[in-house]
Image (tube, rainbow, N blue to C red; front, side, top):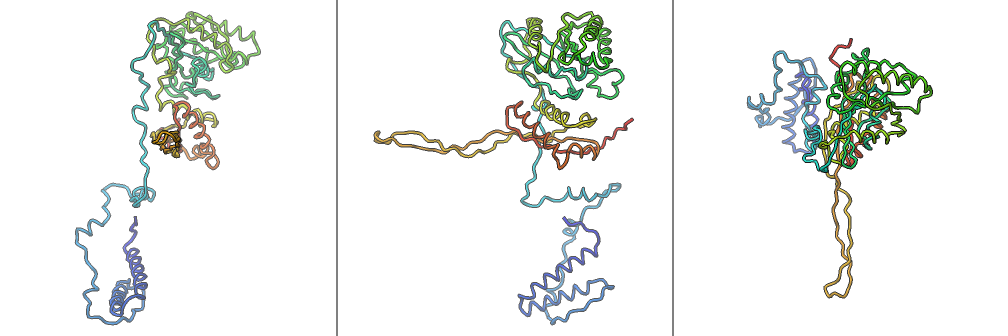
Length: 456
């Protein structure tokens, strides 16, 4: 699309183009045609600005002067070709915006990104769940400080990668349901974000702060998970805040579990801390149980204890299912854990996601020739028959935008020559394919959208 800057520029450009065209035609035309073309040169020369001195070419005279008159378009046609006037008060379109408004050249295919539909965003709905007549169930909310191993424990108890895990605190940002079915009993676990202390309430989102406390009302029991290493080597301000809030606001039966015992060296100090916290909450029904979720130490013993807590009731998910998490939430969690693993500092906590494409396509595969033995028409001769089968496989294409607030953050997320975003996309795509059971192509794009909210 041409952009008109001034009338003189367009006239000069048109004149030069016409002169070049006439010069080429002159070599292949008859004398009569050359006379007509010469007259057109003279008309173009007279139309030049007066300040520009030019030579008027000598051309033969012709009597058919009417053929040289320029054609005048109807007024309606001229108005249609004229660019629309800007509305009053509107802003002038920038160069980058004009590029996006250009017409697509004929033959060029433009991809239409279709975001994920409602069925991808909604939690799984299983309909009628097949279960035994003596079905039993119990719900457990796993609650503890950030980075105490809650998600690792849930994955161990369910035998599935339901909750994402990283070494960074606050990887889990919302409540996640997971389930494990053993015989006629089903254990339902509610994994929650880590508890934050009173001093850190303003630095995290409202969902992260309130989710653990709201989830307490959904469960039959609470698993109070404490980090043994932190109790003996670091500050336990978060644990003190947790037990103070439980004592004032909850009466849920609790199971006291101490994680990461393989990292503890000061056993006496650990015993003192456990005794202190056991006395803070009067509704502890079992514990303390010492485990290592990462090392899979005493996890089976804890699971056996939890199975003894079930009561007759309907299952929440079928026996083969480990969660009701929506496909979109699972994909976002698997992408997010990759940048939590590969980025440092504050950046992992400020990156946002937006889905712009979700499509399941059929990918043609090379044809397969199948040979079979058969018998000829006379029944005496064995013949080999063959036929070609066309094949195709299903593939999921996901297009996700990763949004940051500055060019510097985008540069860090992209990495040198895009190496970091490639690593994030590759590892996330492999995990998504395993989780959803379908080959996946993941396209990640980094965008910069400045935060309009004032930072204080």
